[in-house]
Length: 194
Length: 220
Image (cartoon, rainbow over all chains, first blue to last red):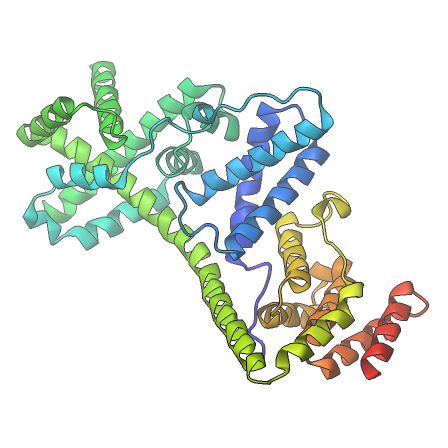
C-alpha cells in the first residue's frame, strides 16, 4: 500500500506558498515586471528549488532557506530580463542581505557571557518562555525579526518585502519589537524566578 | 528621559548586532564583554536580546531542517538505489539479465514522455507550488532510472482525482505519467489498468488513441 502523500500538505509546498507574497513583493519593487511575468518567474524558481532540494543540493546551505530561495528568484528574474530586455540591472548582493551574517558561534559566546551556571538549569523553561513570547508577537514584529535575524536580510530588503516606506522605518519598528520582547521577557522571568 | 533611554538602548542593540556579526575588533569585543559582566542592567538587556535571537533562529532552523531532512531521506533512498544499480551491474556481469528488462521497458516508454515546463501552464489559475511539485514528479519519472518513489507519491494523488478537484486540470497528465512510471517499474498490469481508464474517460480524444496504442505495444 502506497504511503499517503498529499501535495497540498507538503512541507516544501507550504514553505514556497509562504514565501510567495514576500518574494513577489520584493521583485515587484525592485524590477519593473508585469504580474504575469512575476508569476512565471516565481513558478520557474519554485521548480528549481524543488529540483535542488530533491537532488540533495541543499544539505550544506550557507544561508537560510528563505534567503536561498529569494536568490533563486532573483537569478531567474535576471535571466528573464536578459532574454527580454536590452540591459540587465546589476544585482548587488549587499543590498539583499547584511554584509556580515549573524554567527552562531558569536551568539553562543555572548550568551555564555550573560548566563551563569545556576541559570543553565533553567534553560529549558526559559526557552519555552522565549518561544511563547515570540508566538504572541504581532505579525509585523515576527516578519521583521525573522527577516533580520534569520534570513539576514538588510533593513532595506525588509522594507521592500513588507512594504515599509524605507529602511529607517524598519529599524525603528525593529527596535520597538525588540524592546517589547525584552520588557516581557524580563517581567515574566522575574515573576517566575524572582 | 524615555527618548534618551531609547537612544542608549538602540546603541547597545547596535553593539550586540556588531558583536554577533563578527564586526568588532578583538579589543572592542573584550571591552564589551567586560562591560556586560560589570553591569547587571546591561547584562539583562543583552541577555534578553540574545535570547530573542536564539529563539527565532532555533525555531526557523528547526523548520528548515525538517523540510530538507524529509527530502534527505529520499536521498538516502536514492543512494540505496545507486547501490542497487551497482549490484545490477555486478549481476549482469554474472549473467543476469534484469538490467536488460529495465532497458526494454525504458525503451517502450521513452517515445511517450513529455517535457513539463511551468511556462506551459495558464497563469494564475493554479497553485504554483503544487504544480511545480507535480511537474518535478513527472520530469523525474522521465529522467530517473528508478521510479518507485515517484509512484508512491503519484498513486494517492491519482486515487484522489475523483474526490478532490485540486488536480483535475492535470488529471490526464497524472494518469499518463503514473502509467509510464508503472511500465518503467515493470508493473505492466497496473499500467494497462490506468491506461484503459484514461482512454475510457477521454473518448474520441487524442490521449485515448495514445493510451490504446501503448496498451497494444505492452501486450505485444
